[in-house]
Figure 1 (cartoon, rainbow, N blue to C red):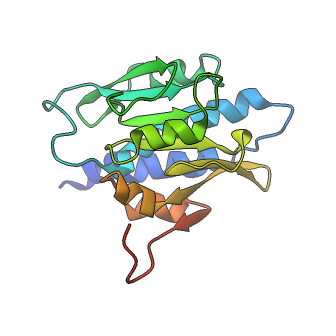
Figure 2 (figure 1 turned 90 degrees about the horizontal axis):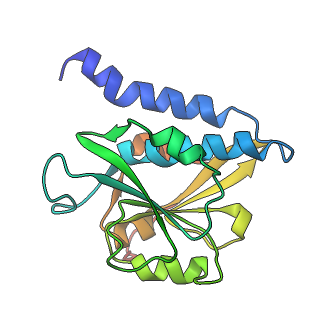
Length: 189
């Protein structure tokens, strides 16, 4: 692979993620916090390997879903507009509740009256869906969980839950995480 292609494909997204993580997320500026989180959501996808058959064909859409209330207030639509994951154009979908057949590649999960975050995570457990939650909803955590650490947006990763959903998270993203919950030798995911 040519060096320029490697730079575009791996180094730039990592540099962007590091830059975004360095942006302070103040309580008074939830707008900036959710703009950073919206960008992280689609950037995470570049560092995840989905199992064979996750896409009908090479240019099938990449479905980024928000299950439950949307805390992004339109920022996620701005962040993903015109973006793609590889050859897959990103399509944003809003769901009242998560279902096993939701057909989402990345799913941001919020608590709602229709479905708790725990119920939404259980609904897509075992499907090739990268689940993302937010510490604003409490301790219920998906494969990736946004946290504010040291006044900055950060995230934790659960590789055991990723393996359960047949997803592989690349080491470059694991290195950027605040905390990684990995399977111990001898344990099964």
